[in-house]
Length: 227
Image 1 (cartoon, rainbow, N blue to C red):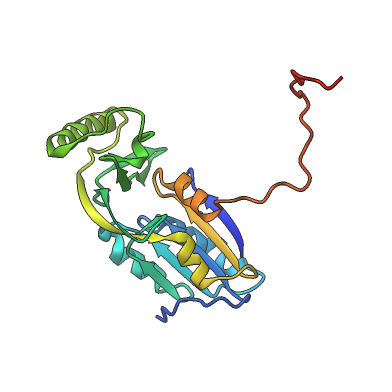
Image 2: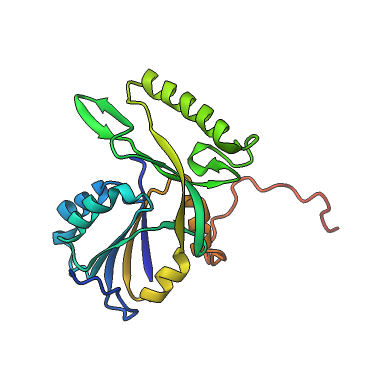
């Protein structure tokens, strides 16, 4: 599988089968569908071979309607109402309502809504899990929410309305492996609010060594040279 990953900084729903003839776009963290709209406008009709499937992963149910509307225009558009992760199951997630967190730049209104999985009681997009004591309980989450709202107001954005819910998770290595093979082209867009490192390491746990490594321009001297 030629996996082409895009980590963003800025009705047949039959899943594809491993065949070597698939060309797929997989949107991890689809949010309100901005990346799907970009894909439709910029990539879909410029591909040298037709796309066979488009799949969007979004754990926030508030975006389901708009995503289904966009996916209905795309080849074998499919919505996975789950979080991209390293195992099947469920986890707590910090979700925000659509339009509850916005900002304006250059006269353009941007949707800044972000939802994140939680580890140790702390959203993954709030810094390293080990970077301090995790928040515990509803009182701590309310306090954290007030701080975030104040920060948003200072940045000129709207206050964030928040909630913690349990969402299903999907083992991305297993999901991709069941649908695609090495000969398939899979374009993977990833914006999953702090879970990128875990998922990428899970997809490639044992990277192959570089057969042509570049020499180190400043090698360290051997403390015990042979006579």
